[in-house]
Image: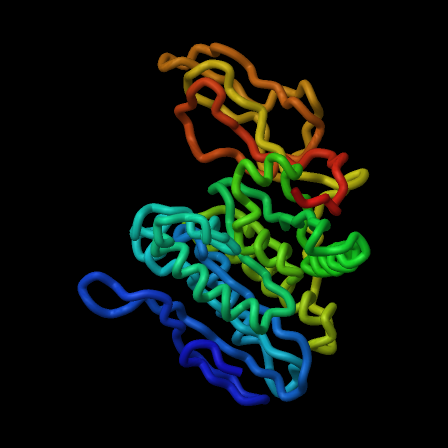
Length: 350
């Protein structure tokens, strides 16, 4: 199997680079690649990290997965892309410095009707995604969230319509449910369909892959900027358990119950509550905590420390993240939460 310059025969491991664009003063933008090609045939799993340049934990996970996998005992292949966004990684920034575009909003776009050529970030994403579409049976797009974040997995909703029947969509949904459960972190469904489109998440790597019929999901591995070693270790076990669920390795890895939630039913992503006045936020709730609607989760104080208002949770649910800010303005979201989900995982495409 070959990706870029990484070319591994069955039973071999190879490292190399996938060139995705040229740079203005010479040289090229090269994504590091490790191909672990098993001695036996089987599925192909792509594991990607650091598509946002300030999210290094996924990179560390790909390194450790590559160290753990024994290709002599592997059925299928694992392709690791440790750093999907070198331009952002060099500057510890979410976006690449090409034009400041979010690199995780440029997959599966169709700009045939546009007179303008695609921006370089889209070109980069299209080139590596072509490789994925040709070979991937499953994609794990590893991310992190805000600095103060409880690890969780975003499970995408599966569209059906002209391009996919309801029954085919149900098969894909069931595969995703099995794989996200195998990964072993709390599963939180994606935003409802309308909000997903507003945020352009259908053009994230996971969104595009699922639209193309490839099981893909997004673990959020704690906070950004630094590698959280305990979360990385749990994620390596999670990747291994996905390989086990796909019958690529024989024995499962340990699970990590310290990261689990115990919800009554499905959960989904929710941003809130929001500040209704400007000021300085003091959080009373922390990541991983269950709160009920009406519980005070933060207070807003003025520059002298006097309380201006208390902010209550709008919904029952789990705190996923505290937003990394002290100064807040009117209507700023304060928390990311996982709240009960009333929407189906199968959705009719527009």
